[in-house]
Image 1: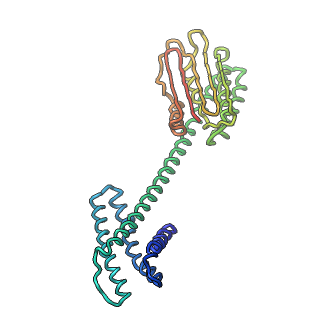
Image 2: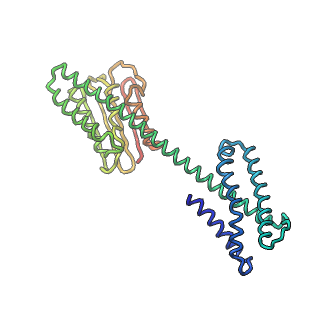
Image 3: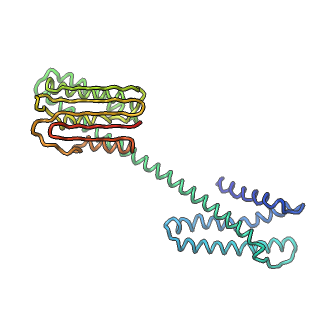
Length: 332
């Protein structure tokens, strides 16, 4: 409302100063009164175009009807401006006489310009409001989808971890208690950190190491883990649970290789500009390559990466008979 009032006040002020040099002494009040008298005609034409014609005909691209209504409004303004001037002259001199069109042409063109400017401002404002609404809807949809994906990941991870501990319990392993302790640390992360928008990268690395420790207890000496991890900037934050799904898939697709060892290699380097993460594992001899995006964890993380780091990440997956490998890079 304030914007509308301000626009028309500026119109009256600009009209006054534009015509100030042409006024005779003592005509100031009369000119302002005459300008206010023409204001309802301009406002009616402007709001009719902005609130009725534009939404119904311009927005849906009904150009014929939009141009037709614009022409009707132009004729209305043309006729009203001439009749308005005749009324002003009558009130001034108590005599009625017709006003030639050529003497009013400048005023009519100015009226058209004011109406066109007001309608353009309305269209731009309406576009910005719709754009902001669309951005809010997209953001809300992305946030809802991310929460859904996190909700899918938690039970998936917990199911896998409990299966690992169950295997140890069946074999009456002395490592069962240590496995439960490590799972407790992992669940602590899931409960208190996974719901955050971002976490320190160092915490994600710690989660990854705890999970690998749990798998080490499960496989024992058959599992050999080689890691090269360096986080140069402790202030770097990432979305939670961004590395764990790759570790889960590593053990899903992996196994003891031809040398009798289950080999897992991890490379993670991060500075203030980007994160580079690589993880590979050996596979059982004679095991056919599965689809690289199989299971829940990997499609989940691919969707989250697309939502959270659009155009700023690259994920490469290689799945051969002997090795499963992922490479992830994220630009901060």
